[in-house]
Image 1 (cartoon, rainbow, N blue to C red):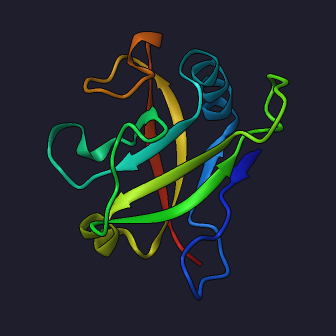
Image 2 (image 1 turned 30 degrees about the horizontal axis):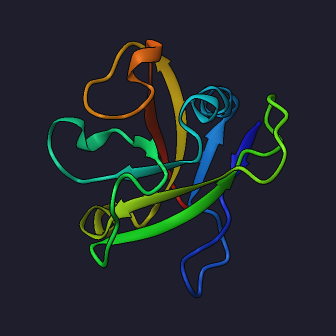
Length: 133
């Protein structure tokens, strides 16, 4: 089971990003700790190949970024009042390479490095991709 993101790119009719159940579960935990969240996928070195999760608004996006979708985790295992929406951004340069792929955010054991908020949990987010059909 996955949670598909809303469509945010003008002219498109398909979701580009999804969350696995494991990712939703971890995001529920992180939401309780940090409040509203966001993802950014850069094309840089080091952690650039991993989706980075930040408190919403902590990573400043601009014209150099593309909003690929908004993920609604309101129906997750933790019951909260109100919508819990998570934006997924990607650098425009990286999107040029990945424009033909659908991305699924998953979780694996192990500590990633960098500033992503899941690092202290002993888990890290990763991207599983497939070509768009």
